Length: 115
Image (cartoon, rainbow, N blue to C red):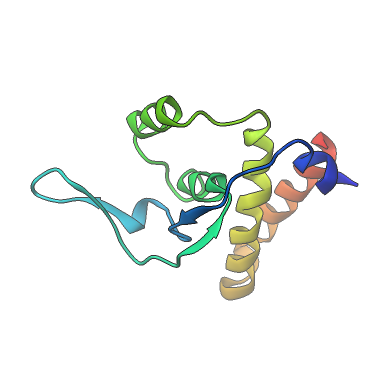
């Protein structure tokens, strides 16, 4: 029940995604040019990449302001962000163990409660 309600009315256009976009996979060159590292590209909802930028250390606030000015986020992004990031937290739980269990449980609880 929660997923259809969460995604109702959200019809994203497929975008080419980085797939693992967090602060550890982004940098600035000496010429002040942005670069991204270690891509795991696929086509999907652009919000998934943006959500991950907030999961393991955020990007600078200017990044989010510029992003939203160029391509505003649709209503419901904040809750969808939790769903998209749950994938990564469950993946980390699978790979690295119980240190991610509490975070995954909190995210699932939030999704069930808010949907």
